[in-house]
Length: 272
Image 1 (cartoon, rainbow, N blue to C red):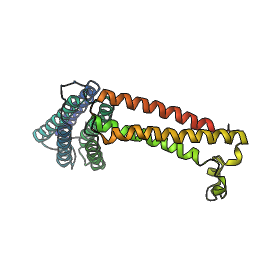
Image 2 (tube, rainbow, N blue to C red):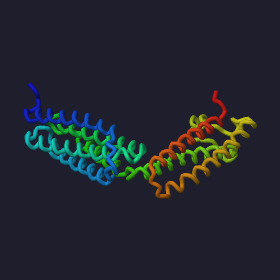
Image 3 (cartoon, rainbow, N blue to C red):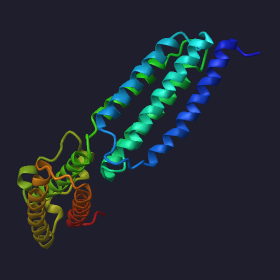
Image 4 (cartoon, rainbow, N blue to C red):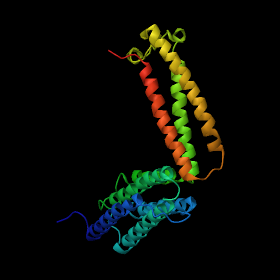
């Protein structure tokens, strides 16, 4: 005979159905609806806030375990399920017209929230006794909602942020290469962690010819960063909203970034 009461068992079964439904319904996030104009991002945030409120109610109702009246439990689970379905629908209709960068960010964050919501329902009803991890799982839901609200509000902002990240990678490569040949400042090594120091390259690891090539590559990397900066800055500061054109600019910047990182990696002599 089960240790759980009949109400707790029934609530666990209802919860399992909700968890399964959320898992299958969240697959819709991979299929944007391409609604003309799309759903404003503010509505997505409002729907996420409703999931957060619903999650808090679930935690309160099942704080002492799954053995609560079936009517109250069923009503709460159904309402929370509707919160999640509504959120998925708003996300789905917000995607499809803002470009792949915006879509990818929203899709990934939305899937995290859906998984957290499913985990919360399962954890809340797993036992007739209070769950020691329920508040932690509720915290995961809250964090997932915060992450949704921090997302770029539209395609232009999403692409601008991605362009800035790409430009930062290029700048980092340029900075790293520019430090070659300045070994005199670095002679102290890393006395706190000699093992880590062994993994670093020093000027004496380079032959004269390798250093000449490295410095030439450093000049190229520096010029590359200036070039990318002059292209990216007006896009980020501007108001261009042709998402397809901006996505092409981002794709080109990422390809250039990869090429420059290959140049940077190729500068260093082979390790034994």
